[in-house]
Length: 390
Image (cartoon, rainbow, N blue to C red; front, top):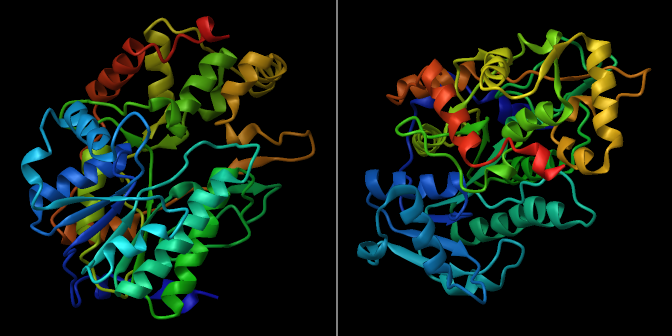
């Protein structure tokens, strides 16, 4: 097992021999988190950054990155040519390794991931787990530290009361009997296992399980491809169903502003080699009901319902072919045959929060106007127009 590795995640070890991020290889730099890590790194550190990106027939990788960087930050990357290098390739192969032969790479941050939750083929596993295998090989060759971006969703589900209700996913746990049915989450779980095995072999690595990546705290800018955001997908699923269960109104959720998440991850990269799992998500929770009732106030058609009535609404939506495609994010209800109770397992991050305090970082509180502005932004982008799509 990995018990000795997990047991080293202590506050005492946080402040020991700290690391420099140094020169960085960043994968997934055109993604929502990746591009914010790129900006935070360029503005706060002085190392070089190598972005592993695929070119398409229409656009070179650099032009694609430039366009997105301008979209998010209204800034050009062009004046950074001495610090920024594009490496053409994909995490699913090792063909690009040669482009970096003899190049010093201190840290690899892997933000590359297929974030869809279901696929007919093995592509999710190939990118999310297979890609990590390739990056581990690269890191061993270059003596680099691998920082794997994972997800709090590896907490999985509790089925029929197992594992015990007191068990949650914290920074000292990995597998404790949780059920993981979702292909995306399963691929991230397997990737974590590869990383933990590599740490056992003596490689330097950290796993960062992020939370519900949400709009920037600075200006409320949200992700360009918000359709792939799991949490936002869940909000929309309730709209598609037309109902929300009373017993979920108090369910605690967190919203982790993307700019703060990127900052937190880069700070945690500097902690001692002994500390290998962090949960950089907001420690200020709000009841999910606060968001749902705000959506209702906006005139969206969701009625509050008791559990059985909600399940009737759910089954109706599920039997509608167009609608059922929009329900894949509601994990907790996916396997609801009557003899099975499925609950999402809690995640905790008290240790990471303490680590971040010591690194001079605090999460901002999730204010009312933050929720409002980000729901309005989604509304304006047509995200809640489910009638037209159904």
